[in-house]
Length: 79
Image (tube, rainbow, N blue to C red; front, side, top):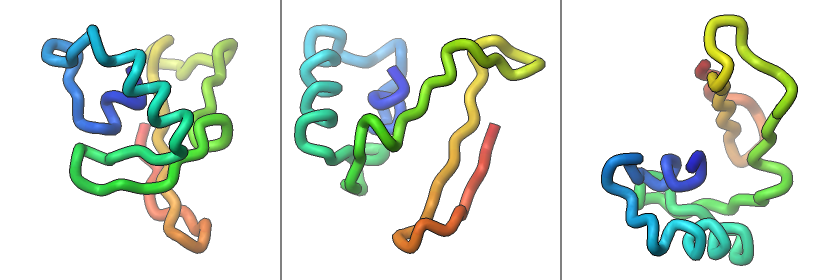
């Protein structure tokens, strides 16, 4: 769900018939299309880190997004 959201999909309109195939395509090609407009490299095992046993204090399903520039310097942190 996170990957499809990064590609601009919304839970109420995502095509569930093709969702698994799209995630597998992201994983196998190492590319993701941010908001359907900007394709970038995406290393599934490195770029998506799930902390299954950690929870944010105000929401069990909360997440923090980190974005980095091409040099690896942080440009955004959003919770």
